[in-house]
Image 1: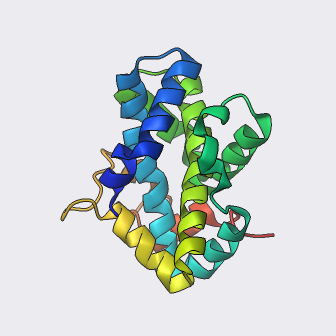
Image 2: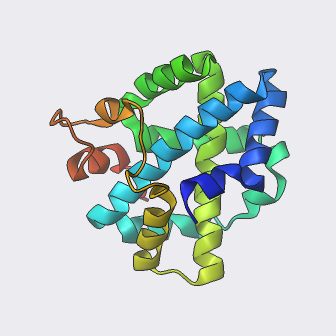
Length: 191
């Protein structure tokens, strides 16, 4: 499965529809925000897995069994899901979160508060999706790495993050690499 399959499938359609309805926005704006945000989040997780963090991701997925995917429409309005999502985002994006939200806001036409709400919805959904795949396929850390690699390799060019690579480049070397991802995800999987 690649990123396009995930976004165009029923989960992606439910997320877009729910976000549009709950935030009172146009579905095309919600789709634009989701289409930009999902690759950013998955790419960060993928880079972490490829650079020694697969075991930690696998451990974190024990808390995300996929149950969240059963009722996407109920996610908005549940403060525990919002808090979970904000916590995940904080660890993934760190001090770059506001910059990422600003870029997604500019691309989608949404305000940054709306983008934050969409990102907070997406983070636990992505973890739930990965956790469900882990459980149903019996994936170990290598399997998680392969799954993430497959999700982000939607094209031969990989994911075009549309300039977001620069925002996520924490060490300033011009590339989204291991040191950047380790910095972004440093606290996500610690107990």
